[in-house]
Structure formats: C-alpha cells, structure tokens
Image (cartoon, rainbow, N blue to C red; front, top):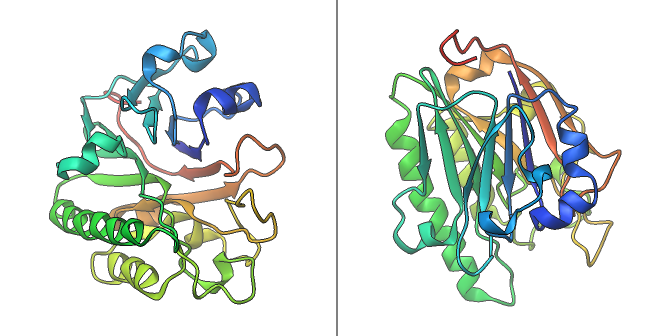
Length: 257
C-alpha cells in the first residue's frame, strides 16, 4: 500500500508545474493533498481527476487551506472535519474509511511570531487534535494521518543551526509530538526507516537555506511493523513542499484493495 502526501501551495499551481503528471506514475493507493487554495468546482480540467481514482475534496469559500484525498477504491465513508467548531470551516481535515484502516489528509494551522494570535490558535488546534487521537486509538482499525504538520520534531529535521525560536520548532510544539508518540503510541512512519539528518520537505520562499521536515505520515501503533519504505521526492519542484512517499506492507482485503 503506497500513500503520498503533498502540500501544494495551491493545487492549480502545482498542476501547472507537473505534479499530477508525476504522481499518476507513482502507482499510489492514496494521494493526500493539502493547501488546495481552490474550490472543487474551480477544478474543471481532467488533470485534477486522474483516471482510476475516486477524488474527494474539502474546501472553503475563501479559497484558503483545503484538503483532498484520492483513493483507488471506493471508501466505506468520507469524514470532513473533526468537530472542532470554527476550525472545521477552514477545511483542514478529510478522512477516507475502509474496513480495517482510515487514511486522512490533514493540514495544521500555520503560525508566525509576528501574529501572536496565530500561535495561540495553532496550540488550540493541537490540543483538540491530541484529544481526538487519544479517543480513537482503541478503535479496531489502523490510522494513517498524512499531511503538513507545521512542526519539525528533532534537530535533524531542521536545516538551520539555531532553530529553537522558530515557530514549527518551539519546545511546546516538539513536546506535543513527544506526547503523541510516547503517551498515545502514534509514530512518524518516515523516521522508522530513515534517520538521515538532511531529509527536509519544506523550504520557505524567503530563505531556501532553512529547510524543515514538516510533512510526514503519523501512523497508529499497529502500523509500525508494516512500514517498508519512505522517500521525500526532491527531483522536481511542485511547490515549496516536497511530496512524501510511504509504502506499507498492509493487506486491506479484497473488499478494499
């Protein structure tokens, strides 16, 4: 089972840069896209609806954020939003449910030091998300949350030398991931099989020398043994984020795949 996640900086812009030409050649079972910056009815080209995939979108009227999930097989159900009140109107979460697994596309709120309210808002979203992850971990299914997390966990996930004061690498944000992993049992799938210190997935437009690995797939504890391969694709540039490709040895059953 192959899952690709990609933060697009606008799905229409990424399509013009060749993202869909590349991704349809990757034989992915799921393609999870974040930061659409478009509404579904804007996407009139067949390129946005590759043959062989069911496509589901969750967007908003302001053309901000937006998430999508492409799946080869028809899901049992699609869930949009997490019940987080006004956060759900920002179109940050969509999930496809199958018999034994749920795969989600997720986009965490962006925060910056010059916007203090954004820092508080991001922290509030993470608190709500932690409660949700705690609630579902006893369900009889596995989970993959693929997306743009706006957090780099360890020093090896940062390109710059002194990153401690940067949003996305603040102590409280890194501790949040510690708690998700050590207390709730979830895991960053990429780091199970790749421990290199030069694997970054995002480079801000203002400084191409400050890469961060903020795009990854958070998996439930039962999926840890199934991780086979992980790669951040950097041979082509589709946005300021690079696609993350993860392979799992997971049998979804004949009813699913």
